[in-house]
Length: 222
Image 1 (cartoon, rainbow, N blue to C red):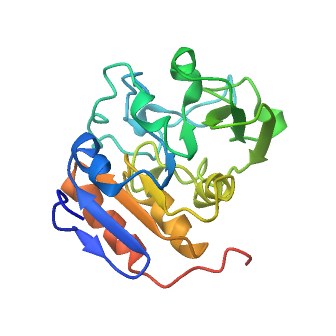
Image 2 (tube, rainbow, N blue to C red; image 1 turned 30 degrees about the vertical axis):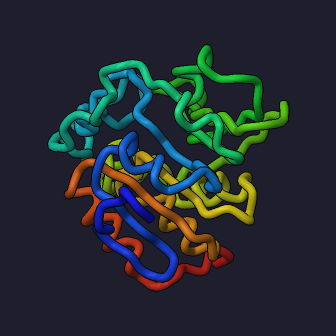
């Protein structure tokens, strides 16, 4: 396709571009399904080691997270979803942070914890907007709550959550994640047999995503 840079990584299923999605995405065409976890505009403190474990009133230890992530690019300014709304199939996470800029659509809810922990610490769930419809659909996945120190990216979503998101899109369309991060959306798409394109500014995350996507396809039914 004209106007595109050389791919950072490419195989039969996945293509990764390093650069600004505002420059690259228009050259990819419009027949794509957008599935992404963009910067929300909340200036998120990525130092996950600041969290402490233990029940209220007990001795709490410094968390086993990481303090060296650095800031999430563009998270210090409001997110504008408008460049992605005209695509035929769209799922955007963090929708509650920019809901006033979205039309009516379907709501996806990722429940991050068990009922017994509701209301105790940070958010119990995260919300995505899906283009079209009016319903609200939930999925519980607690897999990353115990893996803070093992994540590839400070705002990484579980593989199962991104697979679920992809399954909510038009299956005839390739997936585009314009805010790819460490490539979880691309990894999920590959495992589901969907072609996918990712765009990411930071080289270190392109490298991680390429490594993850170069591995054999996972059995999501296992």
